[in-house]
Amino acid sequence: MSSRFLAGVLILVAACAPKKPIGPSPQTLAELAKAESLLRNGCYSCLKEAHALYTKHNNPKGIADTAVLIAVRDKELGIPSDLAITGPLADAVGLISGETSGLDPLQRAAVNRGRPPVDKNNPVRRALDPLFGTDLAATYVALTIDCESSALIQGVDIAGLTKQYEGVPLMQFRLARCGRPAVATKLAELRANDPRWADTLFWEARAELTSQLAAIDFPGALKLYAEGRTAFPKSLAMTMAWANANLSVEEFEAALSGFDDVLAAFPAHRDAMIGRVTALSYLLRHPVAIESATRLIDLGTWHIGDAHYWRAWNRYHLKEIEPAWEDVENAVKGLSNSRVYMLAGLIAYSRKDLPTAVNRFDTAFKADPSACDAVWMSGLVNIDQQELATAAPKFSRAMTCFISAAAAIRRDRERIEGAIAKRATPATDRETRRMDRLQRDAENADERSAQSAFNAAQCYARTGDRGLAINLADVAIGHPRMREKAEALKAAIEKLPK
Image (cartoon, rainbow, N blue to C red; front, side, top):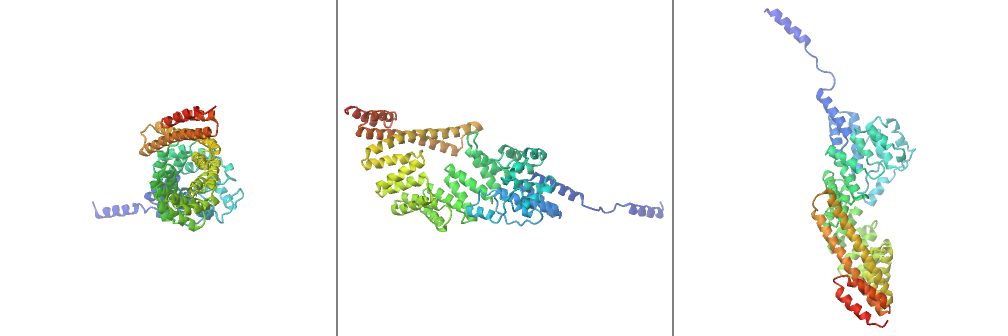
């Protein structure tokens, strides 16, 4: 083969060699397509990953859209954020309040300070109308504004939009939470289909705790909150909800840890402060509880009545009676509920101020007819005052009150048993402890009812109502621990002249 031919072949090959591609590489196109898919998926970690990909490839539209959606999701999850949003959707994002349940009163006020009312004619919201249904980020922002506004939500076609965005998890998440209790089943489906959707945990747990259709699954709700707290440790809403849920089921150490986590980030968070005081009080850490209550009182705003109440409660248990009385009187000025009047009655009784004690106990029972201890204590003070005719009907009311209380406690226990049976798994340690406590409480209420009947029988017997006294003695006889004493009382009454 001649050298010319070889040279010709080489020249021909060089002339036919492919040129360098113009435009994005296949890898870039693949990563941008992935970013678009992540954006449409819409979970928090998906949005973060999409934002990183758009930033890597300097895609201005993608960067702006994901930044906006992340800012909105921060608000929805109650995550404090200083992220600055720019661009055409920035003002619209400013109209969104988000999930404010984890904020304290001052923080909630700051969220709404200076915000214009969101109504049908709001120019910022109306500016999104041309983009609604065509631009995904703008549609999400507009829908979020509408779902938060009582003036705008009536115009939201939830069924139609749900169908339109059937294959877009981002929009399904938004629509499942629009203007009503979250549709927990739809949110749970998102997470079941894609475990990255930890965003749903908060609303799933809240729906479980507010269920009106079935027994509340407290362990299940706490587990959901705990998982959400792990996924979003900076979410005030998640941490406060988890702490308060633990407080409600008397898991005071766990509740305290949650409130302390919030206070580590926001030392003056009023709701976390009163939660901490409450947990410390039930843990009987009286000096620390008093110190924490004092700090809240010194701040001068929000929960001052509750802080005085708990400081009085702890001082009463430390037998610091006069400081406790001063606190409970201050608490009464800010609160008007049964528990504060009950505590005031106990402290007044310790001060030997019997008329005031009776007044406070009677007020407590009037405020809450299920406050059985209040009417019981009022009757006891009347006996100390030798006012047996006044005491007698109070003990009768206490008897029926404790009967109702025992029944309510047993219903609570049955609800827990129902939740356990529904999920077909063994009871957790927490459930076992709670059921044991409820059983003890029910048995105690039974005994208190019998004691009330016994005391009423004595009072009626001594004031001349022999027949009613015998009937009440029979009620007391029905309780094993009261039987012997009540039988003796009945025999004594029967000997009285008719």
